[in-house]
Every structure is written in structure tokens, then in C-alpha cells.
Image (cartoon, rainbow, N blue to C red; front, side, top):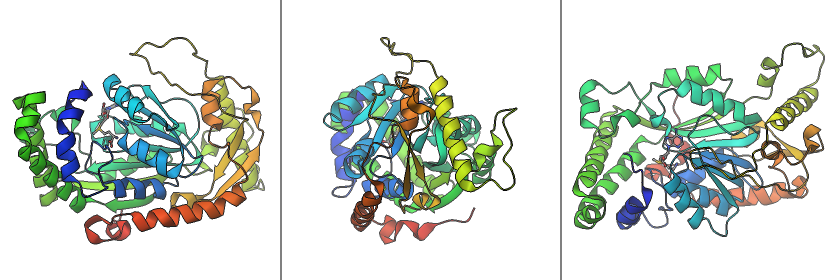
Length: 391
Ligand SMILES: C[S@@+](CC[C@H](N)C(=O)[O-])C[C@H]1O[C@@H](n2cnc3c(N)ncnc32)[C@H](O)[C@@H]1O
């Protein structure tokens, strides 16, 4: 439901949210995901030290703070709600998170390693346009990781029963996969988290009901009733299979860049090697990013304030397919045409890699990943991959 001024809701719901999740699983998320599910999806998307992450619809950035703190990524969160971003910024003090108030799409120009969209795909009426914009924001080899509310669109009577139904746009999986395919994004992982999310929705509903007097005193009876009504419907729909909650990772293949070669640019020779393709891909992404005009002036709250700081010398990170499976594999290349420093979009394109020798990082990353995997709370007592679904 809409919570345009986030602060009163955040305050009012905090105690119930804390009670609804098991110990350590509430990290400020505004969703049905547990910390374990957020962590597992981040790892599946190959998030790790220095990986450039764009978190769309970050809200107050509970997930963003978790992954920045634990995985040491290079994080930029965007949300349309100025009040949510204000809370996110305040709570992220001391962490190297960056935030901007922005309605998406459009997305900031640049080449991100990972785009995240947690628990908000349902708010987008035009998923095709969103997915296209995400694909353009990813560098070749980059991943789009998101949760997805799968099912036929709401009927008229379901819309009448669901508060703020215009932000609940269910979509059949076939339609989404067609959009992903058109945008050149390849599925690498689909997991069904419906049972776990049903349990979380029920726990949240019970906790809101238990704390009803306090919550109503802060946000009003009507807002509380709507909150409980929405959660009741999610429980029913997840129970009945009316909707499924899927966690999905897709990848922009490196070769897809060839399809976007500007008119007049040389076609690849049949004997061109993959390495050359990667070089070309990087050069074009960096060059495209460098074309985006700077905007250093004061920002209006209505405008996207892509507040990106400049960091270090430009270089590119190339992440292999294995990263999308959580098996971090990074190669570092020096230089490239991104040297026209000062352009913040360009810095997005190259901001991922200011780390030391990546070969040395491999061992650290593998150890980190192993540690995190050991902490992942399996959904419904099963490993996160246990509900992988066919697509
Ligand atoms: C359910 S919350 C999820 C927040 C966060 N991703 C999480 O998992 O905790 C949805 C958020 O999406 C934001 N939002 C919805 N549509 C948006 C859009 N088109 N552009 C930017 N933010 C949007 C809302 O302001 C809200 O903060």
C-alpha cells in the first residue's frame, strides 16, 4: 500500500515487524523477504566486494544496508519517495551507500554489474519498458536480480478487495520471460518462495493485529485496516496458488551487445575472438556513459538526483557467467576510453573496480561466500534452490 510519508509508518510498524521475523531476519526490509532470502539472492547475483549494484525502489534500504555491510559492494539505491530515501540515508550513515530520489524508469546511465528490484516489480504497469531500461543499465555480463509476483492480472472483484490495487499488477511468467527475452536478458535462476512468503505475510498480519491500538494511534485506523486487509489477501492468494512469489536472476550476455552495434560500426569478423567482443563491449558502454551530460548543480527533489561520487582511476570489471551462479569470477582490465574523468555517468560505468589484485580477492570472496551460505536461513527448512521452477 502507499505510504507517501514513510516516517510515521516506519515508526508505527517497527515493533510488529521485529516480532514477525525470526531472530536476525528483520533488517529494515519493507517486504516478505527474510534477511536470509535477500542475502541468498544477492549472492546468486554475484554481489561481492566492489561489485556495482543499482537497487531500484530501495525504500528505506534495509536490504541495501545489509548487502553493503556484509558483501562490501558499491551500492546506489533509488526510490521515488523522498521520505524513504531520507530514512535510508540516515540509517546508512557510516556505510558507503549512495542514494537518490528518482522515479524509475528512466535509470541512470552507466554500466552496473547488478540491478536489484526487491518486492516492487508488481508496481510497474509496463514491465517491458522497465526490463528494457534495466538491460540498458547493465554492462555485458551484468545481472538483474528481482522478486516477481507471478499470476494472471487481478480480476475486477480482486481489485476492489485489494487496497491500492493499481500498485498490484500481477503478470504471468510467460509474459515476463518474453519481456526479458526481448531485452536480451537470459534467465539463470528462478526459485519459488511462495510458501516462505505466505508464512511471512501471515506473521506480519498477526503482528499488526497484535499491535493494532499502537499502530492505529500513529497512522490511523483506516491505514491499519488496509494493511491487514492487504496481508490477508496475500496469504489467501499465496495459499491458493493464485499468485506465486519467485526470486529470479537474469544475465545480460556479453554477446547481446553485438546486436546493439550502432549503424555503420564494423560487424564482427567470423574469426573475431570472444575477448575482442568483450573489449568492444566495454569500450562502447564506457563511451556511451561518457556522453551523458554532467549535472553538478543543486538538485530539485522532483528530479532524479543521481548522486554519485567520483572514485579512483577508471578500469573495467568483466564478470563471467559463473558470477550469476554466485561463483564470483572477475577479471580486471586497465584503462579504456573512460579516462575523460569528471562525468558522473562515466563514473557509474567504471565505479565497480577500485580494488586491489582480483586474483588475491578470489580466495577471500570464496571464503566470504561460504560463510554467508552457512548463514542463509533456508525457506521452509529447505535450501533456497529447492524450489527451482521450470520456465
Ligand atoms: C515494498 S517497498 C520495497 C522497498 C525495498 N525494495 C525493500 O525490499 O525493502 C516498494 C518501494 O518502491 C518504491 N517505488 C514504487 N514504484 C516506484 C518507481 N516507479 N520508482 C521508484 N520507486 C518506486 C516505493 O516508494 C517504495 O519505497
